[in-house]
Amino acid sequence: MSDSDEAILKTLRSGELAVKGEFLWGSNYTFLVQIDHAGQNLAGVYKPTRGERPLWDFPVATLARREVAAYLVSEALGWRLVPPTVYRRNGPAGPGSVQLYIEHDPEYHYFNFSEDDLQRLRPVALFDLIINNADRKGSHILIDQDQHLWLIDHGICFHEEEKLRTVVWDFAGESFPEELCASLSTFLQKLAPRDGEPSGFVQALQPYLNSREIKALADRSRRLLLASRFPPPNPYRRPYPWPQL
Image 1 (tube, rainbow, N blue to C red):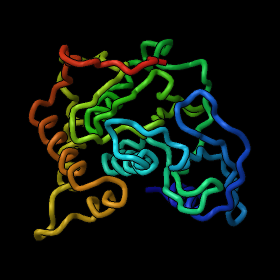
Image 2 (cartoon, rainbow, N blue to C red):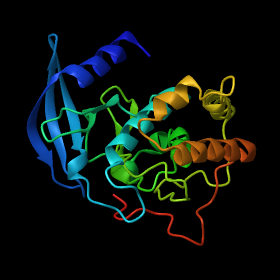
Image 3 (tube, one colour):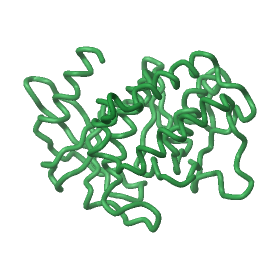
């Protein structure tokens, strides 16, 4: 992690939050916030736990924590796909996740990406397989002004049962590139116990996922590495989110 990322995380964790607006297109309450700390000023996305709509298949009041888990997994893989994200207990509307806001063109998304940008999405497809993403919409894939690829909205991920719903099936049947296999192998090592105790990475995940979900994450990653191939959509369940954008 770079010094700039450390500074961003510190600001997200400790800065003073001021609500500047609300995002209206989602199912849960989501706010644009300004965060000030030690002379640094950032825009962030604040998702308070008490603004989460209950879901029948996910534990109540856990979506904000899953946002943080997705960030931790992205960092552990070394892919830097998820913007810096923290869980704060003292937000304006109570505890919730706070994520760095990414400036991007909302009119440019998966469904009108150039062919070159579509070809950049193999890590995205594998990331969603690893975290069991139940809601990868086309608008959840952002490209910033520096052409860096970012992924947002991971509140309904990490279920212990298969829940994968995504628009990114472009690579079904392809073998994983060698560099992605290497990252996945290293990731599995980070999940492995150390002298019979949870690894440091697993301990970092424990405030955000329960033990069954962490075990499922490891089991899923192990199966993916063994297969080393992007699967096709499951014909026996709905493989796409709704709406898709």
